[in-house]
Image 1: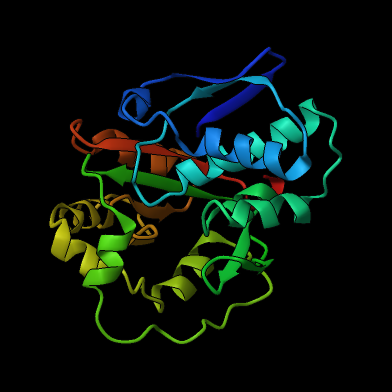
Image 2: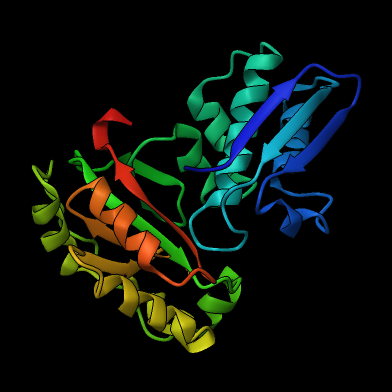
Length: 249
C-alpha cells in the first residue's frame, strides 16, 4: 500500500500523475516530486532530465507523509537514474530542505523522529501486526493544526529495544498521546468519529490519529483483523487495512 514513483530517461524534466487520488494534485503543478527533482538537479550541478511518473494511492494532506514519501522516492530514483552515487545521508540532508518528513522517508524504514523530524534514530524492533488507516476525506493543513495547539509537548517517550508482539507494543503506546490530536479534532470534528469507529472494531488494540491528521490508525493483532475492520468502515471514508511486517519491511 502506498504511492509509486518511477523515473525514466527523457529530454525534459516532466511528471505524469495517475491513480485514484491523483486528481487532487492536478491543480498543483509544482508538487513535491518535481520540487525534489529540481532540488537534486541544482545540488548536483547536472542539467537533469527525466520522465517522472507518480501513481497516487494515498489521500493528499492526510497526515501520513504521502507527499514526503513521494519526494524521497523521487530523490532515490533519480540518484540511480542519473548515476550520482549519493549516500542516503546526503539525500536526506537535501530532503530536509523540502520538508521535515522527507529525511525519514529517504531511509524508508521504521525510525524515531525528533527535532522537527531531522533527528533520526532507530525505532524499537517491530513485531508483525495488523494496521488500519482511515481518513474521513477531509484535508487538514499541518500549519493550521499547530496554530490551534496550546500548551507544551509531552516528554520524550521511553521505549524498549524491541516489542515481541502486537499486544505488548499497543500497551506501551497506549500510555502515549499525540499532542496534535485535540487541536486537529477542533478543526475537523470528523476525526473523533473515525477514532471511535476504529476503536470499536473487533480486535483493535489501539486507535490514534496519525501525524497532524486527519488520517487515523488502528493496531490489530494481525493483517486479517485489520483488513476486516477496514472493510466494515463507512465507504465514504478512505480506508486501508493489512499487515505491517516490522523488521522485514
